[in-house]
Amino acid sequence: MITQSLHCPDCQGIDIVNNGKTRQRKQRYQCREQPCNGRTFILDYAYPGQSKKIKEQIVDMPINGSRIRDTARVLHLSTSTVIKELKKSKLNYNK
Ligand SMILES: [Zn+2]
Image (cartoon, rainbow, N blue to C red; front, side):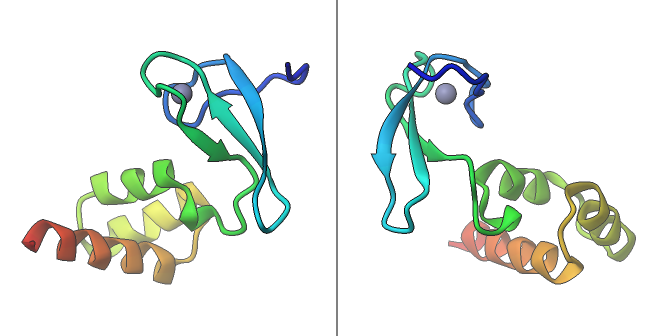
């Protein structure tokens, strides 16, 4: 068991167990809460833009110039990261 207070990035649950290390030697965790059903995650992302949750937040934002800057500021990302994620998500929608 982990003694520090950890929250699952997806369901915010606290039933989290250690699940080994990644190749980059980052601690991997497994969420045992029902919604996640054993999903693993890493808290220490190399780049904030890699986080699934943040990507979802970016995608949820309306697409226009001032919104992109607001999004970047709120999520502590560069505008180029936000624009990159928006473009990626648009590509996915077109599939
Ligand atoms: Zn979870």
